[in-house]
Image (cartoon, rainbow, N blue to C red; front, side):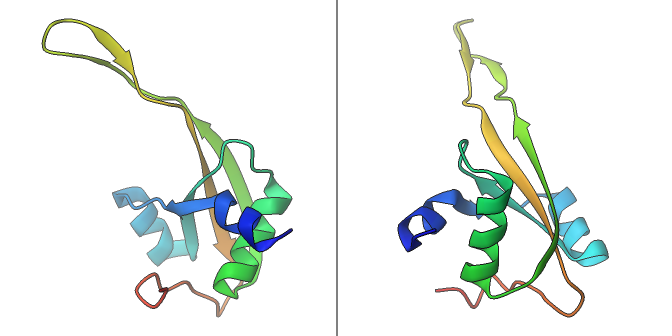
Length: 99
C-alpha cells in the first residue's frame, strides 16, 4: 500500500472516556478510519505509521445520529467507521510525539 493510501485510511484517533479506559486496561486504541477501509489495510497502516505490532483488530460501522433543530427540522450526521486496535505487549502509541 502506498503512503498516500495509508494516511487516508487512518483519519485520526477517536478519544472518548471508553477508549481512554481501554488504552489503560488492555493496550487497545480506537481510530476513526475511512468508510472503504478493510481490516488488512487498517492493520498495515497502523503498523507502518506508528511502528508497532498489532495483535488484534475489530472494525465497526457507527450510524450517524438524528438530531432535531430549534425549528423542528430533522438532520442526520454522517455514518462513519471505527477501528479498535490491540497492540502486542510492550508496544504503545504516544500521540504527543507524532508530528
